[in-house]
Image: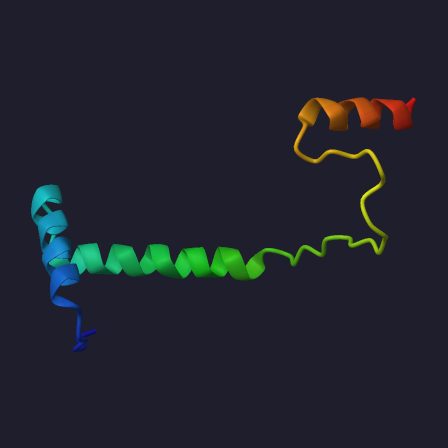
Length: 81
């Protein structure tokens, strides 16, 4: 099917370079780009929505230092076992 579209000059120039380097027509490069964009949109739309649990709570417990990985690890080990 024949149609007319307006494409940014820089984008068109880049597409022409890709076409020339790959030995394909500009039409083939544009069609492939559209197929990829549509496939990505479909894949994103099919992805189930992830609902992350949230917890209400108070403030940080006394003695918890979020700037120290080793302190946090020690605290987690104390509470788990």
